[in-house]
Length: 330
Ligand SMILES: NC(=O)c1ccc[n+]([C@@H]2O[C@H](COP(=O)([O-])OP(=O)(O)OC[C@H]3O[C@@H](n4cnc5c(N)ncnc54)[C@H](OP(=O)(O)O)[C@@H]3O)[C@@H](O)[C@H]2O)c1
Image (cartoon, rainbow, N blue to C red; front, top):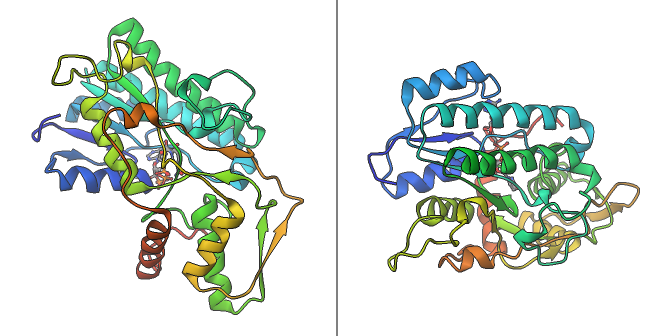
């Protein structure tokens, strides 16, 4: 990737997309193609093809998706599968038609079987049943991975797929119902503190364990992978091995934490002194989701933002941008 290349960040206003934009700009990549949804709906294949034909991006960071936490996934499974499949085919077809040099597709750790051996290695893909609460989303993401690999095999394209763990950070979705567990809980504690509520009800038992990576670390990792994965290193060997483009890559933090422990860190950061009541009638989701990121580590990348530091930064951002943050209406 050269400084003058035209780089399309699909989903540039989201949690991941905005972090990728910040990282690219910090590295001096200034020719960024960014289009809000009201200009181009990425589900609209002909609008997407026109965008690619007009603008001719060289590289694509594919961070646009219909994304949400367990509650949203349970309520809107049809939207999750349909919107993600449509966006994926529109972008991949347009990238192929206009000879994009390399595309990086963001999958998710949800693609792995519910009861995968921990930490989850990339080889666990499609070896068992999925977690039912986000099956529709996971199947769309699996289709995205296989679409990238199939285009590579049939057409010699360079489309790589990256599986991030749970992410959090600036520009997250702080909707109490639709958001992921970390921002949604942060918001609940914040609102309860402001309202002086005696307790906060949290879904599930608190027992599941999850891994969290700050989105700036994720952005750093994906920009690094776009540059090195599947490319020759200084010694001439292909980074990731001869079939690297068809091998997915996990991006994790390296350590996990129970939801109960996470709630305690969030409560402390926010300064909420009330009680937490666990609503065990609600589902927990997958018992544990902890990625084995040794494939990525072997390329020389490591995360740099610890969980407490990342949560403190995110809460400071939330307070500063309370008027413009994504709060939803729940
Ligand atoms: N957040 C996580 O914990 C996490 C973990 C693992 C993987 N990922 C992956 O990372 C990627 C980005 O997730 P995120 O957390 O950044 O989600 P996000 O904050 O919701 O951002 C997604 C972006 O995509 C845009 N988008 C979705 N559908 C669109 C459409 N039809 N047309 C135009 N724009 C559209 C959204 O625009 P609007 O704002 O207009 O809706 C939004 O800006 C996804 O592929 C997700 O699976 C995320």
